[in-house]
Image 1 (cartoon, helix red, strand yellow):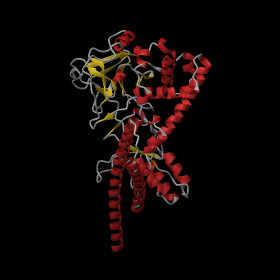
Image 2: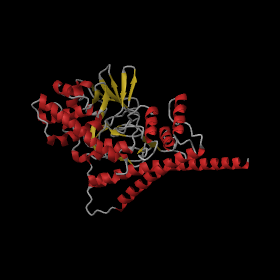
Image 3: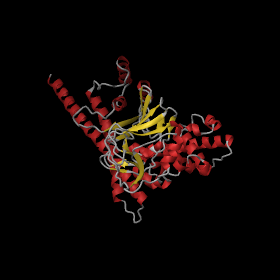
Image 4: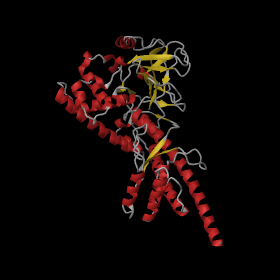
Length: 474
């Protein structure tokens, strides 16, 4: 998420529609388990090399070390909250501008910044030891370390078939192949370097690396060597700040660190759906979990065309969320509902509006909803339906749909628990746990929504029954 404060721009680590280079298993606190080495720091030549490119000191307080999950940054001396821990000049960062001009110009909007930066990594790797980025590229994670769902096989993906992540993974693979075809064509026309079909696998790997490690900057996105060795802590308040005036990116400590402590940064407030697809790890309990659900107007609905037109007319503009999922007039994001007897925060108003439209049976009811929206703030069916029986029916539709999703998630989790395999690889163990974390989090969200809807329907039924009784008595 991009924030702006005068000439200083703040950039959160962005998933950028891709996948993780880190197979990380987080604790309840959101911190990565680690085993910092007490011996001399690793990669002694990396920081001097980067500072030579930068033409300035990168850090006086951090050193590269190794934790259970790969390269990490540790405090080499006492760091106080508010201290600037590192500064990486823009000229020491990798951007899409590294592409040859002819190729960069020929790549249309069909190839995003991630695809362009992935092409940079591939071309630099093909250049071999002549590339000035060799010390950085050689330290990037290998494909075997990648655990985002883009790298999962069909059997592994079947574990999460009930989640929207499954469909999104398929879409992402297709998008990456599409972008590669444009990149390959551009190189064929403007460069002696050939991008062959067999380079697709390398492009997918590079695409994943870029998406999980890149920061948003004034140039679109950038890979920031050294800074991207910092691991994620969900409780951290440290982010990367890009200062356009000073032409550098920096990170300020949000807490005190003692020598030998690993330093952390916050990637963002992401659900497990985003983490598993974009970063390749999950939280065992993620407070930001959410569920993407889709509802449709049945093909046999006599008012289907009218309902679809009404939904399109009054639907707010399509918005891209912080993750890879897109909202539309039939796709909704449910968050955990904290109280079954509260206001149902977490169930979007647009979803309830969809259900209210869905249960209309005559054109006049739809016309009334359209007039109501026009007279208020433009949002459709924002208020409960005046007909209590119809309002009850609408929310029963939602409850039924969510209960089916609960059944699907429960069945997938049970199937995983009962699955027996005599030969289990470490990779499968990791991905199985990730699938369990994802589905368990979504199941928790769905159950909270179902509990609230059930309470709401019970209340509506009681009110409707009392109303009918009073009418009969009168």
